[in-house]
Image 1 (tube, rainbow, N blue to C red):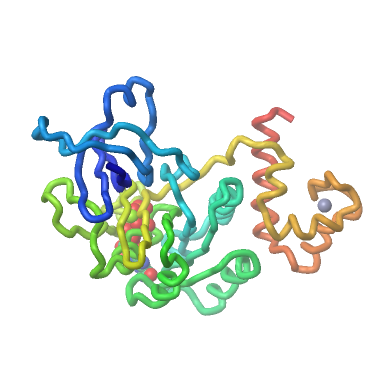
Image 2 (cartoon, protein in one colour):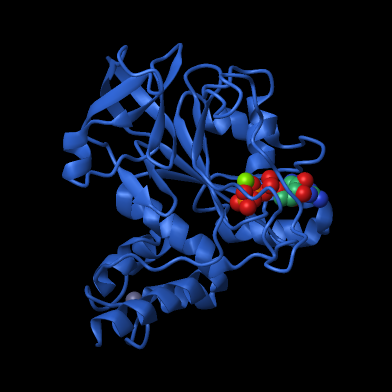
Length: 305
Ligand SMILES: Nc1nc2c(ncn2[C@@H]2O[C@H](COP(=O)(O)OP(=O)(O)OP(=O)(O)O)[C@@H](O)[C@H]2O)c(=O)[nH]1
Ligand SMILES: [Mg+2]
Ligand SMILES: [Zn+2]
């Protein structure tokens, strides 16, 4: 049978076949080959009637369309990059690395700004301005549900993961989108009951939410939409790549770069650089250019250039 891994905890996997969810383990040969099973993987599995603890055994992983390691998910159409401006404050380089990762993997990005109730209209507009000419941007209020329908529309019919720092409201969004739709996963303790994603306040010393999400989990929404809720993080490495790759991961710079004097211009110190001109004219956002420079520096450090 064919199904999708919607959750994995300590070597146990929950596999959804379109209507039912069964729990099981990977076949020994998969384990011996140290094959990783990602949440999102489409797998070939058999129902295991001889084992009363395991309902199924996973035989093999069908070739992935794509995957990310942070968060660890596969077969995505879309990544919703989620951040708040306050509680926690935004760290733009982390956001831009996630967006660059989408460009690298051919995944469509959407930007979602949460907790709009905590900032002024002007602060929100300034943040929207950073991304509005590059990616679809939505702003939501997780307390009232404002903006959720717009997000629902954007991810309609697609496999979309929420990714972003801890405590920004990813699980809150999951619960709002999930609403009364079918919960695709079996509850790990209560045998298939409908359990919402846990959300939490950022209250303890570590700054992480009390109900911080620990495992990726997929929720089936209406119209063939699969929503992945993922654990948050605070930092993110730049993927292993060349400087010329970094240059291609910022769409707005790619466009301007066609007018640079040198074809291999990396838009740092070269003369007649159209990207720097666009930056001076405000056509490329300072915050994006700053993230770009940080990524270039990280790559240089790694490559010991
Ligand atoms: N004021 C305000 N609080 C919100 C909003 N959305 C979520 N929260 C609160 O923010 C806290 C964290 O929300 P979560 O949904 O658990 O955040 P998360 O992104 O899933 O966090 P991790 O699972 O740790 O990655 C909770 O106390 C939520 O109630 C919002 O729009 N406005
Ligand atoms: Mg969460
Ligand atoms: Zn240039």
